[in-house]
Image (tube, rainbow, N blue to C red; front, side, top):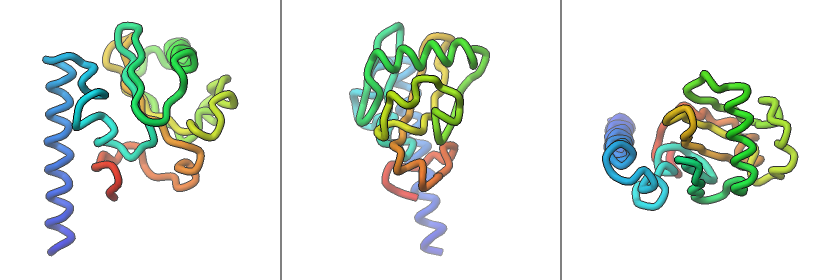
Amino acid sequence: MELQLASQLSEKHVLRTQTLLCDMLLRDSPTGIVTQSPSIMDLVKCDGAALYYQGQYYPLGVTPTEAQIKDIVEWLLALHGDSTGLSTDSLADAGYPGAASLGDAVCGMAVAYITKRDFLFWFRSHTAKEIKMGWCEASPRGQG
């Protein structure tokens, strides 16, 4: 019974966080999802997150450099332009040619397309790849 209650409380927290972030994204300044609390890192267990919005890069935590993210964006547009998102435990395995230049700090990535040129990113380090936790599972950072 305690586990069920804890799970329900966690789920409510995630839904509340998602609602707040959606409001920031749609009504307020979209950059609030990386500059305010809660942030997009509170939705997914990750080492870093970023917003790429109207050609500007807003990183949070461990992320690629601005030049590297622009390269990733171009790769996404060239190979996955008609997609709504992408998730991979390994950018190298996904075919990203610049994966080796990212080092161990960034290995896995999940991306959600806001528009055809605006993106939300979540990044995991090489060590997180070894754990192989599901990207699709939304939970508060540090839990689950």
